[in-house]
Length: 309
Image 1 (cartoon, rainbow, N blue to C red):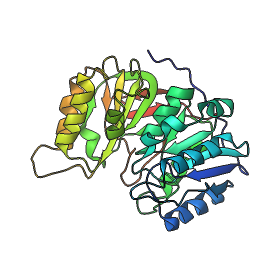
Image 2 (tube, helix red, strand yellow):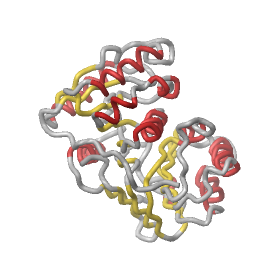
Image 3 (tube, one colour):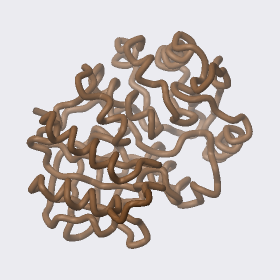
Image 4 (cartoon, helix red, strand yellow):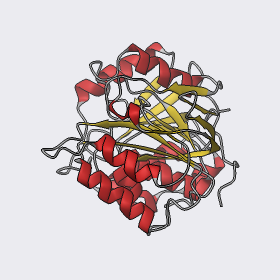
């Protein structure tokens, strides 16, 4: 059973140092340079982790290097925030190597999404650390325009609640079950949630609002993942479901991802709100995770308490 208790790190302030880490896939220096420019413009002092540009195939360096960078960031008192460069794959390979005592001793806001869902789940399990589901430092203006930057800034550098409204421009807008749900917002990328089943990091979602988003997974695979979650009992007792962007999730069949989400989530008997611009799509917005959320499917809004204090 989930409670609203969580560990909130201090809000970022101008002059604070933030470390850019690559816990998952390798990144591109030119994209990170744009992220550095953005963070610097907010008055922050971004520094690269020692192995931020390492590469071993589809990983940003060996597991030991990626874990070491995270532990350096968590242990350094000068570092006040941890911004992941990107997702990709690999966070699950290093989460068991993290120094959770250091996280609990000096909590810092951790921002990222996609594969970083695995890291945020581990930090929730090990320290009850609230986090930020939002764009990484490998910034791409075409996908994350001004409104995306403003949303990330607000989540990291203010203590105001975050409200995201469903928008008709999003493919999942039609996915909706009326009602209102209140509980901690947990989740992120659907693949990583499913891959966490059976691990110590899979949270008990009883009483929680589940956040899901995905990219480049056809409808039948989305169906398979949601069916797996349901059959594993993971969705038993969930208070509601916040549906973000399902980007490039189409194939040759006439069943759409919206059809799948409507059917699979509609069977839960809880409020569901689709159309939230949270995920891998253009205009991605930022939301805290681990903090108390109110999902109002009738009003079309998701309001989340800040991850920082």
